[in-house]
Picture 1 (cartoon, rainbow, N blue to C red):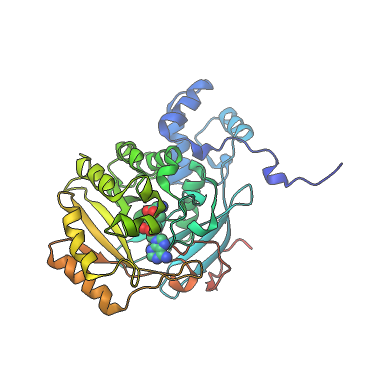
Picture 2 (tube, helix red, strand yellow):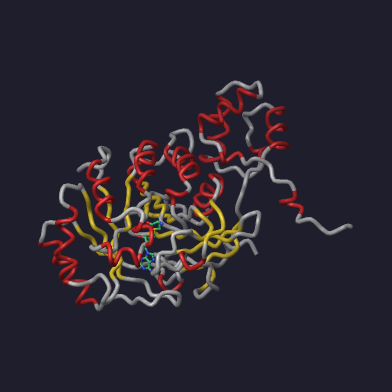
Length: 364
Ligand code: SAH
């Protein structure tokens, strides 16, 4: 039988981007090279962004050959890029097994944020989220999380720097903690990406046992998808609430020493017309958040065909926001970005392109 193998992925080898620095040093040591070679490799991979091992000119030839035969360097390829009228760029990326994931680059006046995915699909089945409707396929590897950043960085203009990273794409980061943690080590290591931890935010629907282990990795920000003020409503929106109900979630955050005024938790609250947008909700929320250093992010629902919910009118959104503000809550209203290309929060579902392709950056 001579069925043709997809040669590029016929043999998958360990990926060099799966290793953060301590592991990369160990890897070198185990193979008889000094540990600092690991640091040099990281600098080539993440600061210089090389795509071939031959570019790593300060490594001895035998080390380069060994890396070349034993490791892969990239894990994702860009399938399409779409640019929204507001400048947001959605990248559709393909993995070795045909899995498709999305990352969203959001340039703003004073920062450029990338929203990365952590899973192919998502197992949480939140009733308002397009990714939830996809079902769950698998966790992403560290290399696949890191590659989203490398690919996105290549789309930036000469004056743009990727300043912020949010783990708010497809998937639940805390159900893929090992790969997420290792990627955070790479993003924050001065020898690798060298990002300030406070510029990284990981969002969770509330997988409580994993919150402390995540916050131990680096002093990053935590975001929590709250979306409701009663268990009755949150059970429907975020089924995980049946395992970790609101009072347990909030008690965990209240007691978490790494959440404090210097590092508040960001509560995401997606407003859905007639579901969680009442004045009673707005009045209940401050009491619930009492004693937790926090900010609230209001996100009007981004509608999509897989969910029966709509955003409230702007009058209702403003009233809800004003009510919280009046109660002394630090609240921001998130402008939706990239809605025209299905790149806004909760719209990541690998839908067919709707916007203009970005010229000159798609590989084919
Ligand atoms: N699973 C994680 C990471 C996803 S972050 C989490 O739940 O936090 C994506 C954010 O967008 C979450 O707060 C999610 O609840 C919210 N979201 C999902 N669908 C949305 C939609 N259609 N409109 C607005 N926000 C949505």
